Structures are given as structure tokens and as C-alpha cells.
Amino acid sequence: MNIGNQFFNQQNWPEAERYYEDAIFLLEERLVKNPRCVESIQGWICAYHNLAEMFNRAGKFEDAQRCLFIPHQSMLRIYQDQQSDEDLQLIALKAIKLTLNPLLEFAKEHPPCEACLAELESQLELAYGDQRTYH
Image (cartoon, rainbow, N blue to C red; front, side):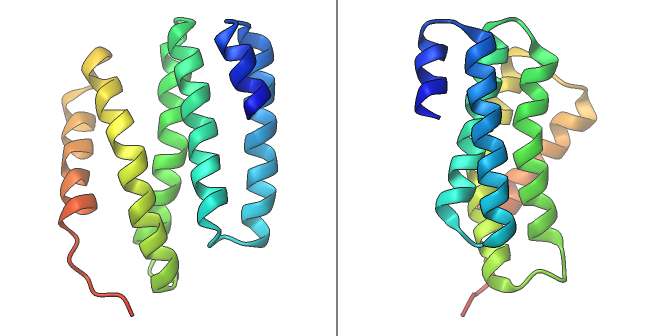
């Protein structure tokens, strides 16, 4: 990730992309072994967000949006999956708080359709209005 950041700062988009994608792959391997590793989840989300920012600066807005949606939708699915245990759902809920705001910020610059924007805004209530108790 650090090497990707160096290439990002040099605006060497192809190399930054390669290193961010490598980081995503390595973090996904870690998450297969330990899906509750908060550090790996945060790193995985960060790698996608760095990739999204790189695509945004390069003018590849659809790719940027895709890189914001992947971690958000993944965490949303885990949170809503009734088969997931409560600890994993809580981790996913906290991760949604990390993924939702960048999507909403992106939507200010690159407005999605009304239905998509309404869905994102409704997820604010999900992320910040959840009052379940976890033990």
C-alpha cells in the first residue's frame, strides 16, 4: 500500500493501480482466513478508496465509483446476512460508516440517479441509527 501511495503521489497511475490491487488481493486472502480481522477490513477498504481516488483524479469516474461500491456493498451484505454472527455484523456496521461517507461525497461531484441517491441516504439511518445491543 505504501508503494502504491508513492506512485500515487507521483501521479504514476498504472503503477499505483498495480500496487493497490496487489494490496487488495493480499488483504482478501487474509480475510478468507480471518473474516473478523478489523485491521485487514480497514486496510482492504482503504486500498479500494485509494484506488477510487486515483481513478477519480485520472478522470475514470465509473471505475472510481465501482471501487467505492465494492467495499460498501460487501459490508452491507455481511451486515444484512442473517447467517452472520453478531460480532461480524457489528464489524460490518462499523465498516459501513467508513464506506458510506466517501460514496456520498463522490455523489456530490458525480450525481447518481435519484433512486441510487435515495438508497445511499437511507443507509445513513442504517449506519447511524442502529440501536441493537451486542454482547
